[in-house]
Every structure is written in structure tokens, then in C-alpha cells.
Length: 178
Image (cartoon, rainbow, N blue to C red; front, top):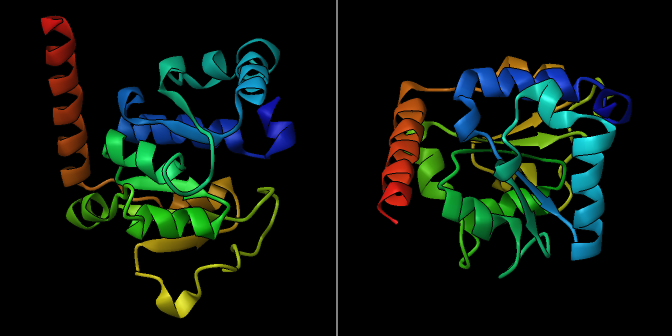
């Protein structure tokens, strides 16, 4: 299961879905097409991730690089995300200030967060900054040690919920017009 790979992951994802709503929760992973295919198969058929978490399969996206024009921040910007969890602080930095696409305004407007996850999820210590020094980070960057810690610190403001709901409604109206 996913919990055997990253302890608490299934419960953590379920909890985030409960807080934000399943239409508002996305995963952006970095993988090339061959690995993407394997990951999709593993999530669906091996660990039954979608069934166990109520995660929408269509909300899984893949970037071809962690940063830059094909990076996670470009996809996050297109999705208008206000919260993001990643174990790489260079990714979090691009989510904040990449000229190719970032989510800084959404984070500020909606009291969003960039959660810096400690790599394997079993740790009791929060993630350590490598590329984005702590003194240079905004308060929106929150180091977390594991999925239990994520659930304790993630905030869902009424502004976040309202804007997310409005985006979902607008997308549904747009797709029904096609």
C-alpha cells in the first residue's frame, strides 16, 4: 500500500480531500512518460489509491521537470492552487517566484501554504531547507515532518474554499458550453 511506502499517506490524502473537497485536490508529480505510465498503473491497480482515498484520477498531473518551463509550478499556476506539499524546497521556491508560472498571489490571497515535507514521512523532525534558506522564506512555507504533521498544520480558510468552489463551478460551466 501507499502507507507502506510513505506512512500515513492514505489517511493524509483522505483528510485533505475532506477539508478541500475532492474536486480541489491535485497531485503534480515529476516523471517522464514511461515512468508516468508505471505510476498511473501502480496507483490504480496495485495500491488502489483512488478507491482508498476518493482521489479523482483526472486530478493527477505530471510535469516533465521539477522546475522551469515544464515544471510543477507551471501546472500549479494553471490550476490556481493555494496549497502545495513537496519534499524539495527548490520546487517550493519556484512555486513562490518562478517567472514561468507561480502561485504566490493565490497563497497570499487565500492564506495558502507551501508545506516542505520531510522525505519519507516517518520522521519526527521537520524538513531541512537546502536550496531555499529559512531566512529567505516567507511565512507561508511550513516545514513538516510527516503526514500527521501535515494534517495538524494545513489550513483551509473560508477564502480558499470559496475561491476553489468558484473555480470548480466556472470549469463545469465552461465544459458544458463545449
